[in-house]
Image (tube, rainbow, N blue to C red; front, side, top):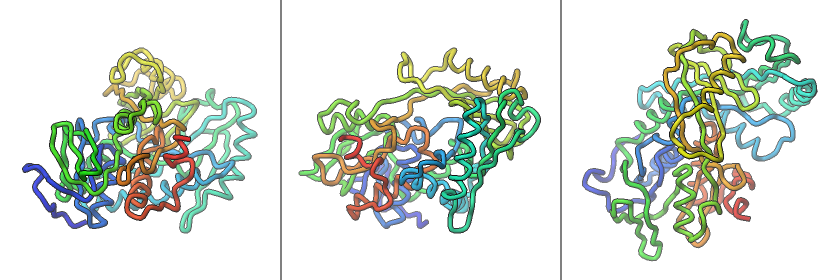
Length: 386
């Protein structure tokens, strides 16, 4: 990527082809792809780059189940297949390691009917989990990956090992993405989007800075909903809500090549350096969206039951933040009603990290070409609003 900014961010950019509101993984991808398309880009982040839900601990990149195939599942599959090459490109440019690994996933079968479902999904994976140069499997077995990963008692009806899932270090990935555009994009930290006046062709930031912007893409996570509500004079709930998640990073002697484990909403994700991320809660009611509590203690205890190697593992970090859940739960991408050059790309909830690069591409396609052929109908903003 050519790295030459058309202006000095320190002096206050006065114009750009596109302004991106939000410095999480989606916003960073929008900025990167826009720059690669030859556009002058400003990225405005209200807090700090990667400081929201994109700065979490888990980094699990898991596909939807392979049965009842639909455009949404195909979109996610294609994104998960293409992501390693995109990450490798960023790593070559920046010299930073995103700590990505296609590790696969173990799914303990805890009830008799889970075994029947697993057989159906095995057949569906044979049909649908195929790319031009790769095939991914869904194996049903009696044992986990290694003794106690997971505990045999946790899989009374066997276990599935699928080879499509992967993991990435969210913070390393976000830092590498930010580094890949640092010399080419005007990054405004601590300065979010405040107003959009298409008639005048101006936007203003929360610090009162006026910027002439050809297009605006809102990719501000859960803050997108309040921002959209204010700009369109709707309630934030018209667009979506914030869901609190809590996770922890444990010190444990788990091989980082081992597969991640998922059972009933509980994630166990091995990372390099003797670290295992566990989580997460999904809380729609909470007093403090950024504080951990007893619900995380329960997650840590449940993880130790599922995998005894984690019993007594020291906690390196406890984390809580808010994730964006759009009205229909799926990602929300499209032109904002009442505007010609204002777009949104947010709401991926738990699947955002695996598809952020494709969400960004679709948002840019809509902004620049008024079409995004691969975008599923269920992801389109008008579907959510209808």
